[in-house]
Length: 132
Image 1 (cartoon, helix red, strand yellow):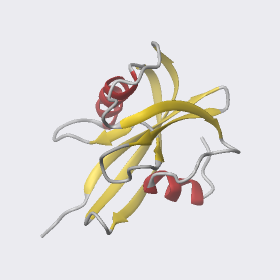
Image 2 (cartoon, rainbow, N blue to C red):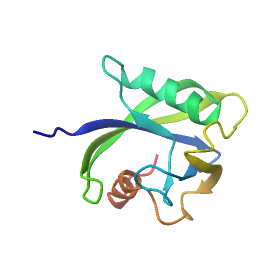
Image 3 (cartoon, one colour):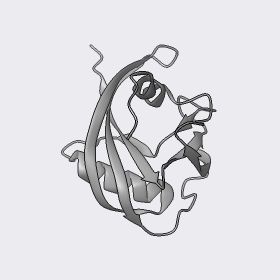
């Protein structure tokens, strides 16, 4: 029996803009996604967000708040994810492309002009009308 996996999406917000990267290689390739990744066994959401944000962007999480979650089925990949989002408005460090094999690059986007296509969990989130 297959079980859903848990992902953590990190909504990094600065001056009314959202940090997104274009995915490469993994499921959702070619779509725009927030930093994030899989929750590891025994790991808290905060620890996962802190780890993934640094691993992917070089940024250090200073403070976060919990956001909503989405429930997405990736039929083509036969994957099912529950994605818990966290909102980060306080961070430090220099934005860098730390995993070029997984992401084409990071860009800031105004919430009123988000790129397409969005990674499924992010698309599901914004279809609810949610804005951090």
